[in-house]
Image (cartoon, rainbow, N blue to C red; front, side, top):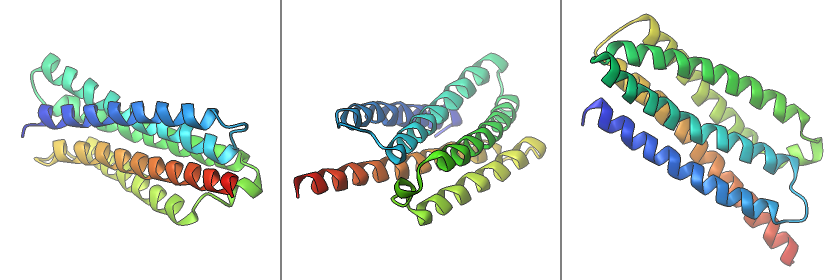
Length: 171
């Protein structure tokens, strides 16, 4: 599988996850009140599900425009590293704004796990920008998949949170 095919697959998965995020947002908003923790997760999921698709499609377009893979991969690794910093900054600030009683439902384990994934991705993408190697395409792909992994974890946490809230309402 060449890099364009792999990036196309990432873009398709990203778009599908973004679509399911919209469906979840509709279900969450149908409740009387959407809490800060759920809003935090849905916003993160939207950001994390769109970004890999965007970077994948931009990379594909640049590969065809430049006729090679090296420059598009390095440029998009830089973009992904920059996006990672912005996403982390936004997530930390948004998490602080959630009332303490609602913040308790956010898993510290998954928060830490996601931060480790995102920081590892940031370092990998910076190295990819600075050092060109035969693995550059794989490192960019790893970064996009890592962001999708964090999005998938967030998706599952939202589903469990909604299911838990629904069972609490029924009891």
